[in-house]
Image (cartoon, rainbow, N blue to C red):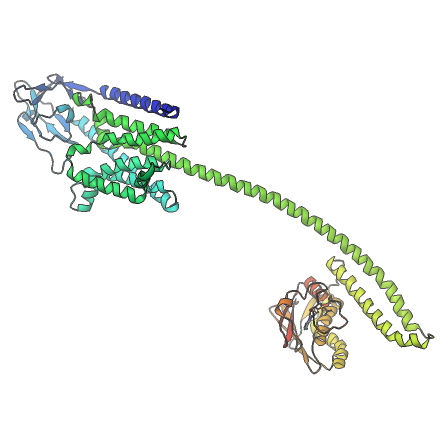
Length: 602
Ligand code: ADP
């Protein structure tokens, strides 16, 4: 045998031996009452020992001798196939009574033999009475022990039922984990089996059918869980047996076999050894949690064997062990270990994802730090460049101003140069204008333009701008119209606002062909003034629309005027610094609408 199997096998045998002898010891520590002894009533419960056997009839007898005449005793008994007689009174088993229930009978003075002060139990069949549970107690004791039985019974059903629901809900949330489904089915079968003594004889055939097969199914599913939970595969073609279809076939074939086999066939304890084999294999393959299940299964098996096999068939079985068997408590250690393992598997998955999340968070933090460092670096560089540019633009203005003045004042120059002078002047104007715009834009971006804050009547401001633009529009033969629907006052820098509107209106005139129209409207609503500049000009394509407010952006192919590509950026920046906004809508070939929104003083 391979080395790796030795340890789990040794553990199995050790735990089995410990469980077996522990339960035998518990069994033997229970009170017994010997046939013919004088019975002193206490609230203990007694197992009967020392049956007499009649060699001719081969029947078993037991004598109970009462302490006094008025004594009442209770016999607690399980299923006795051939029945018993107490001093000639036949004990009838209640209807529907089966091998997982206890019933009780009161033995009072009328049943006693007055001379001997005793009663004799007679087992009608030839069955070994040690196999048939009869326990003796006082009236108080019996009611105490019977309620203990029902409590243990209900407790066990509750445990397996909740485990089944737990497995099912986990499975529904995580259908990929196949073993959860089989665990739920296994504990479901245990629940039905535990209830089988009540369900077996119901008028609903399906429920009786389930109840009559639940025991067999619980054993098969117990084996299947041991494979499924560790994802153990069967070799070759047998692998199919563990597929969903394979398992359902096994369960159905088993139910059929159960129909036709004798009742002894129900005691298939030996099948549990297959699951033990699967668990030993899992331990040998170092599967997580395999040891825990092996120990749980071995304890369950050990408890079962104590009641099922010799030497208990020839000696009294304590009430406690009987109750454990009737309440199907033997499976619970294994089922609980399964539950613990499932919880552990889920907890591990949970910790894994938590660790991953923590890792992710950590790398996010690192990334964030890097991004903010980089952004700061870029901002610093941008600022440096801006300052540098601003200095250049500033330095350009003075010589250009001087140069322009000189050109204006030139009088005595040769004829050839005089002819060139208007062109030189025009270019100088353009460069000077460009330098002004660049300087202003750089200052606006750097927030270095100190804006005045005064009350500015927008209507009057627009009047002035329109007047100034009339010259340009007339020259271009473009109709310029202004409608003031209502007047509004805003806070701000009048000079800069004029500049912004002038840029927008001049643009509208420039990009409109002769005979075209430019309308300027002023309206207000909800504490906002809306100034629209509508033209019937060339329009802007949707691709360019997002970019026209960018610095130096000029739509390619538009008719050139002396533009710097800064007019809109300057207007945008000024309006933004007045807590306003500019939006634009345009259709190529039809015209453009710029809408400026400014807050007004109520
Ligand atoms: P420019 O100095 O070139 O006019 P602007 O920043 O003022 O620069 O405008 C950017 C671009 O937006 C212009 O090149 C032009 O193509 C387009 N544009 C601006 N206003 C209009 C308009 N009213 N109609 C058509 N296109 C316009």
